Length: 346
Image 1 (cartoon, rainbow, N blue to C red):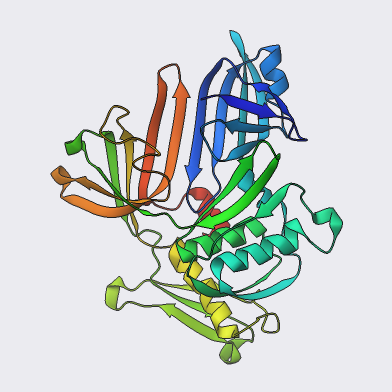
Image 2: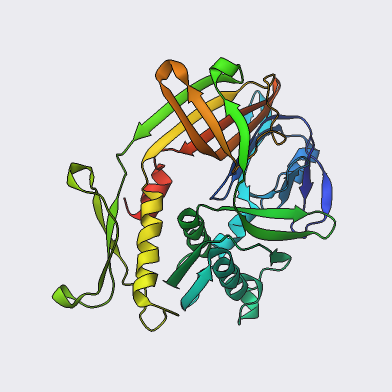
C-alpha cells in the first residue's frame, strides 16, 4: 500500500514517505476521515498541505487534506487531518426549496446535480464530480429548504439503510458519488473463531426514540401534524420533530409524506444502540475486503456473554504504524457521538 498525494488541481505529486501513523476510517452511511503523522521532511511538507488530495492505493476513495499542524518534539513532525471526498457535498447547501419523491438514490442524484454538479449559478458548480448510482429499491419523499447537502443525503442514507461513497479515478482526475446497499456475507466473527483479538459490546437506549410527532405549518390547534413509529407503555419513547422547514408548496407529492420522511430519518438516527467494536486478528480465518467489507451484513457473537447478532459493518478503522496494519470494526449501530447530537440539536 502506498499513500499518494495530488495537488489541488488533482495532478500527481508523489508518495508520502516516513509516516509514523495513519488512521483511515471508512464509514457506511456517513463520510469517512483520516489522520496522519509524518516526519517533517521537505518532501512530506510539500505533499501534506491543505487542499491536497491523499489516496491510499488499495482503496476506492480518496481524501482532502483539511488541516495541517507542524510540531517539534525532538524531531519535527507534520500532523494532517481531513475527510473523504464525499465531504465536498458539505460545501453546498440546498439553495431554496426542493420537493422530490421517488427512489432514495434518484432523489440524492437530483439534489447533487442541482446544487453541486450543474447548478443554475455556475459559481456553485464543483468540477470533476459526477453521480452514478443504481436504484436502492426504497421509495420516499423529501422536502428540504436550505439544508446542508451532505447532511440531507446522509439523512436519506440513514432512512434507506444505504451507504455512500465517492470513488476516485486517478486517470481521469475525477470523483463519482454513489449510494449503495451492502450485501449479505457469510463471514462470522467471534473470539471463539480466533478472528477477534479484543471486543466491546454496547447495548443502550439513552438516545432512543420509537415514535415521532412531526409538526408542519400552522400554529396551535391548527398546526399540521404527522406521527410515525410506534410502541406502547414504558417502552414507547417519543420526540417532537420540527418540520416547519418543510414547505407545503414545495412538496412534490404529499405534504404529509414529506413530513413523515423527516420523522423516519429521525427515528433511524435514534434507533437503539446495539453494536460490537472489535479489533480484528490479522492472522485469522477471514480476509478483509475478500471475505467481508464495509457495509456488508455479517454474523458476530460472544458466546461467553450470551450475545449474537446479524449486523452490518458500519465502520472500519484502518491504522498503519511501525507494527503494520490493524483493523477495528464497528458492527451495528453504536451510541450517538457528540457531533451527531449537536447536529440533531441534542
